[in-house]
Image 1 (cartoon, rainbow, N blue to C red):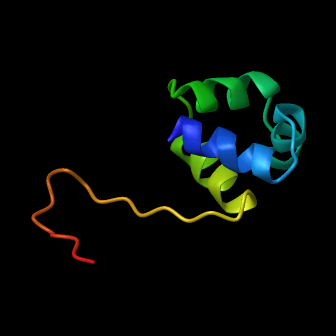
Image 2 (cartoon, rainbow, N blue to C red):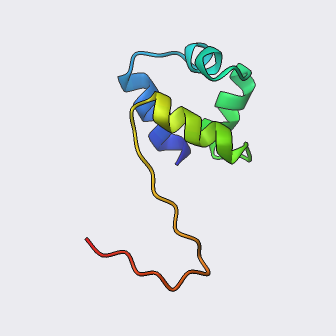
Length: 68
């Protein structure tokens, strides 16, 4: 997910600092997010929304099957 966020940020023409300011977090938080390191799920979801992307979460314990 980190790589996808990094790619989307670059496509949007934003620096890590720009994204951090929009999310009201530190640039270090964005660096960790893009490296795939532990960050708040809320921050990750906000970044995805700010970058105009969408994500679906399916719990592993769920018996739900996702079909195209």
